[in-house]
Amino acid sequence: MRNTTHDTNSNIPDRAVLVTLITDDVKRSGVDPQNSLDELVQLAETAGVEVVSTLTQSKETRDPKWFIGKGKVQELKAIIDELGATTAIFDQDLSGAQVRNLEEALDVKIIDRTQLILDIFAQRAKTREGIIQVELAQLSYLLPRLSGHGKNLSRLGGGIGTRGPGETKLETDRRHIRDRISDLKRQLEEVVRHRVLHRERRKKSGVYQVALVGYTNAGKSTLLRQLTAADVYVENQLFATLDLTSRTWELPNGKEVVLTDTVGFIQNLPHDLVAAFRATLEEVNEADLVLHVVDASSPMREDQMRVVSKILQDLGAGAKAQITLYNKKDACTDEQRQLLPQNEEHLLISALDEADLGRVRLVVQEQLVGQTESYRIPADRGDLIALIYRMGEVLQQDVEDNDLILQVRLNKAEAEQHGYRLAEYKV
Image (cartoon, rainbow, N blue to C red; front, side, top):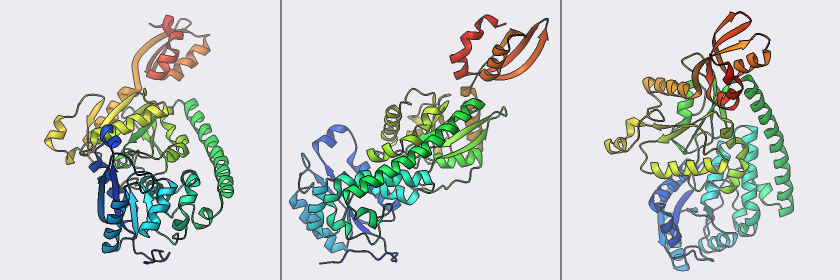
């Protein structure tokens, strides 16, 4: 029997066979299984895994015991033995019993898609909030599956699927893990409370908030860095940045806004991860404008856009004012370009092209800043004068008799909410 335990000091990467199951449900869902498998390859490589082979099984339904069926497990075993693989990574989620059965049959580490994504997040998290969120998601995922990870726990010397909570936490019983989950939730609530206070302060200051959202590796962090000179990690890999980053961004008219880069989305984003990161993702709900960054060159572009739209709907941000930025135009084919809508709400850009960035700045400014209006306000109505200053940027102020004549460039959102109070004072 091959010893698959890894030395913690070893730099030898996991060697993995990737496995996907195509059921009738998958065929009906409209998801391209090959695209999903290609994405799994990217995820594995991002996690530092060497992919040595892939295996596809077509079957009406999942096998409750073996997931891919006993015959296919034997075929997988032969591939693993021939290539010296140490891990099998499945593109779908496995039950605890399936993990246990597959481990006993294959004698390698068994990882499913969710665990792989959680492992990448564990590598990427740098801030206290990010680390808490990832550990909470990992433990929430592992708790109902502990009975299926008996042998897997003995492999926790290192490597894929073992980062984050770590050996000592995973080997404790359910009660200890539940206690840890409760403790993490309390810590996260405290972090969230501070975040809410920051949001309220930003709102009171009247600063516009713009959120970058998009599928992972669409170029959000590159765009943030180019627009704001932010010192953020940028790499051509999935989930290159994880922690929320906000920077001040100056528009052409001199107005400053807060631009926030959110965590990248992905197909089948783990539920535990969405729940743990909900406080971070809800920054989108506070935004005055959402910039949806799309990898225009991706063959899975439409599917990726649907994934982002669905998550925004789930967060309650589906109706937010939105501009779609089709990024990576230099990598697009002519056919891909022709299929793209191009108008004030849909821009084809390169995050590295200064002229394109200038267009983005102007369109965002136009979206955020409403029309210019003039008001004649009695000098003794300080409440209305204060409201005008809150609703937009006062461009000119004159005094005539006992009235103030104010010319103001309105904030669209504020004007829609409070403008009725000033309707009778319009000049």
